[in-house]
Image (cartoon, rainbow, N blue to C red; front, side, top):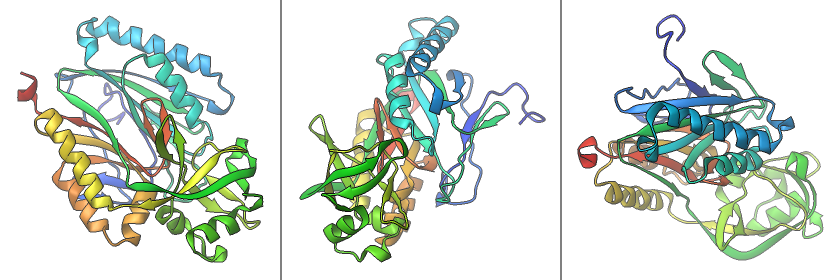
Length: 331
């Protein structure tokens, strides 16, 4: 980048798979270029998330908004959205997403947590030549092209409840559900032998939490030798989780994309953040090719995440995206 495009600003991260113009793939580098004739951008990297005060992040976002407004003027700033990339192993996504959202006011936020192909060792953030972990990148983008921010998932809550009765919130580890070893109680609830639990099991049998009348996934990352469970999302004693029943991923995603197309009057392309657990679940249910083809025909590009950001929420087992309409529609 430095040699071939020294004046080009860029931001990115490591992933858990890519969504390319050919569909779902792995082991690729993917770049989306925003034409300067249609887009204006400013960005900032926030370091040391684990020790950052949230007020600092909100303040930096507000400063970023002022910088963008100074460049494009107040009228143009109306067509603005925010992208974020966050270290997916930072245990800080909820607080950071909330702080960014607070600083954005009414600007829609969309993003994904960086992955490392399910190794769960180190994820990387990349901004203009700087490569770090324990950080987040916030990009504010203004455009005259019509866009729509959306999310879709594919689960229905059941009446089966798991109450967190012993946990380590700082490390997102649950030791007990319903006063029983976490892995044993979870496995019993979904009808699986505890010893055979894998990321595939967790992808196929998600748990959800009710927030403000709506259900959100709280996905399990992995099982430890002592039967405790690590989560991709914040967790704490007293949280009530429901076992969720998956619905047809392909049909749910197709319906969401059709809805977006109707809102925009046609889709030019979609930047998508797709939970890695959806990819695992698609393989397990043998709909991987169908989902891949759905992304391909709808011009989706993006990556597999360790969590998704949507407005003020940090989510799991969800596809969040920003769809761009045709320029003619704007005119």
